Amino acid sequence: MVAPSPSAVGVLLRGCGSATPNASISNDALGRRVETSDAWIRSRTGIGARRVIASDESIAELSALAAERALTMANWSAESLDLILLATSTPDDLFGSAPRLQARLKAFNAVAFDLTAACSGFLFGLVTAAQYLRSGAMKRILIVGADQLSRWVDWDDRRSCVLFGDAAGAVLLEASTDQRDDLEGYLLRSDGRRGEVLQLPQVEERLPLVGETSHQRGGFQPIRMNGQEVYKFAVREVPSILENLLQEAGISAHAIDWLLLHQANQRILDAVAERLEIPNDKVLSNLAHFGNTSAATIPLMLDEAVRDGRITPGHRIASSGFGAGLSWGAALLRWSGPA
Ligand code: UT7
Image 1 (cartoon, helix red, strand yellow):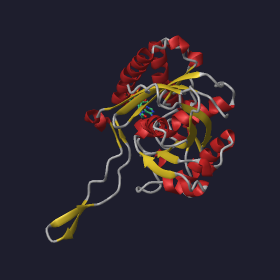
Image 2 (cartoon, helix red, strand yellow; image 1 turned 60 degrees about the horizontal axis):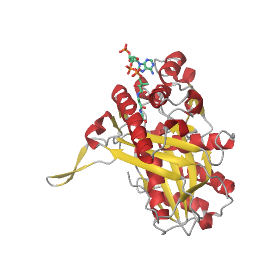
Image 3 (cartoon, rainbow, N blue to C red; image 1 turned 30 degrees about the vertical axis):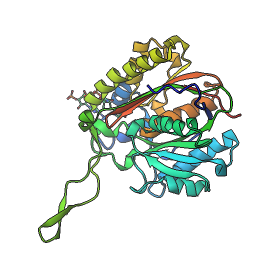
Image 4 (cartoon, rainbow, N blue to C red; image 1 turned 90 degrees about the vertical axis):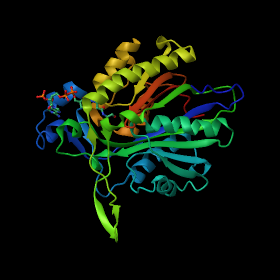
């Protein structure tokens, strides 16, 4: 773990927001397309429905909505942002969607770029953003986790299509001017040796170019997932990284107000909570309504719990993101809220 040095600037969580597409697909509706049932999906995953982005909507648009809601909560102007980090694996444009988000927000004093780490993207983005604040280089940062996996799911593959949905979630971070620090610790990991269990691979198609030379055609295949292996990875690594983080930070699991995990499967949330001996009423879950929205799950859930009053200023949150890469990480956070 990289513990903040005593002289480093603290980081405050000042605002959050989220946005989801209007179209909701129930388990029963999916059952009319693939051989599945509401009972199977709910008992194996906890998911009841997922949102699907419309063909004329975009990740930049959804992200901008989430960001505007966060800016309103914090009472910040978009011009006051120094950096916009968009954690996504499914940009509208492979060159990146963060500058489009910047343009929509009219945040012209900010530099904007994408960060790709699949379902760990938001957590990795948060930790990345914190470094710019801790170094003193920046004061205000917007991090958005947003994905539109519906565009990359094979809707005829019942083993994966039932899991995913689309959403965007935003968080505003500010450099602390006092001793407070909402990022009490973090650990980040990746292991590319195990990456084949969850992929969104390129199409394999070589086309003639000139003479003997051919070129690889651009484009991607639908998501390929070995569900059981991903499940085993999550229930092994997530409790372990959270335990290590709590131990390094010298904080007991009893001191946690909320467990805010990447929303992949209710059984994964339950297994992690059980291992850490965190009671169910401290485990945040909105899987029933939104499914797995990849980089969006953590800020989407945070926003819901802040707005309905479950998370209040000063609460301590243990969070973990995990997914393709393979990648995983954990962070111990506090929610400060607007100044
Ligand atoms: O961000 C990370 C993203 N990925 C994940 O989080 C995935 C983690 N893995 C999982 O959540 C679970 O492995 C799944 C929910 C994907 C699958 O649950 P499972 O309990 O591991 O099921 P399984 O793959 O062992 O399949 C059990 C049975 C199989 O039938 P047979 O071979 O026993 O006859 C499957 O064909 O369930 C069948 N099955 C389904 N049946 C109805 C698989 N998918 C479905 C389905 N509806 N949608």
